[in-house]
Length: 389
Length: 83
Image (cartoon, rainbow over all chains, first blue to last red):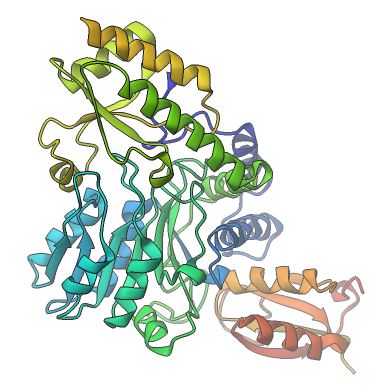
């Protein structure tokens, strides 16, 4: 079996991740941070270590400003609903996933003005377009760090600079890039970052978070970040004397029993990435991506989408086979060649409109850290056989 | 004079952050349930040797960890920290 659906979720997970999750349940099964007994303390320590692991990986200043959520969608909803109010303006890129566009459309109905900066047919965004879009100001700019359809990498640091010049915060959707591309929230000027644990970070589903760049070094940005409203209210194990949600992070924005076993796995996933070095994993994925672009590009009847240069994208390659629906390609690859991929619109209609692939969508190959070059070659041969029919 | 003290925080996540910072500095803090006489709140506190209280405060302030207060505790043999 050749698993090329890492952009949906990474598989298989490192054995260390499974071991950490089992150990959490067997040896640290208390409710983290709620009680004073040893099992609760052991669980709380593991959850805190996961905060440190995330903050360290993303170069966020404070582990306590890592807010754990169920996934990136939950984190994006927390940021968008927590920051935007009727009358506010928000600017976004043209390659966004529905995890951004659906909350934005819902907010639009309440009186939030939504402005989308168009992307090129390769999925590229021009920071100059953000300058123009921000002439009338905005509270927030939301940017997909890399397209889940074609992998095109957005100029995040440049857009952050443009956002700040216009008095807006920058929220980065790092669902496709956390653990895949180097991210330094402080150096890149990212105010908020939403991530998921189950893709590049190699953790289990049910983990993710919103990371706040606090302190950011600029008072106005810190003040806006401190104004985020919680999406949920509830128990935190702190300030129990009060029936008001506490002010301190992470409790202000995170409540209820966390996914301790999942977060143990997430921390183990991040440790696994460090042990292999992010840089060498990126080099490997670049090699796989080049091989895919070259191999698929040579097949008559196959149309490739996205940038031709692998350096401009993550390991996500979209294509179509002439005369065959994408669903048929996906089904045959699975049944005849055990190549597993995702076809269709990938929850990103805006991106497919930019690419010119709406409404049919594309076939998407997304290899991962353990994918081998021979897997890519076998998948390319399978597509070539389909294209010959 | 008291031999041990505790520091109280606003969130239990900060207790774990403080524990990690103090351990990295070579101290041996201990997580304990917040003494009821100090707070009617539930939760955890960090216990330490009272003679390193200045160092504890310096470490927490340098890392920007918000804390409530440091309190000396009446010593009982079971509560003595490891060092």
